[in-house]
Image 1 (cartoon, rainbow, N blue to C red):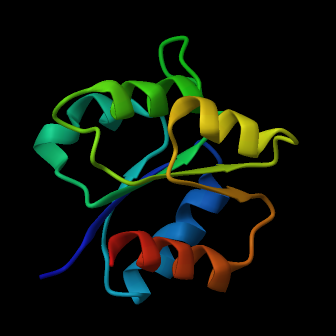
Image 2 (cartoon, helix red, strand yellow; image 1 turned 120 degrees about the horizontal axis):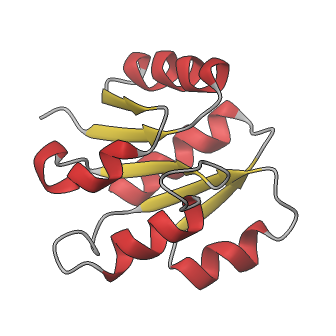
Length: 120
């Protein structure tokens, strides 16, 4: 069965690049340029979430969205990978409960390997 990945990223170029990469890797890709889909996780049923930390969603950034995902009984099991150029990304990721962090600019092979390892 095809794995579903939710990508929450506000940069349209990065979002499209990630869409192409993960579609070619065999994923069903759900794109969210605003983060609104983070409120619909039980309907979308992603297997993993890639989350830009600088996304702005109703006053919440990616770290707040990650905290919400990880603290909700119905979604706490979802692997979340934070993507960002923030210098304290590891600290932010640990605070919000992210399963992994990947710094921008990122190596595509490293990112796809990280996603696959979290899903295995």
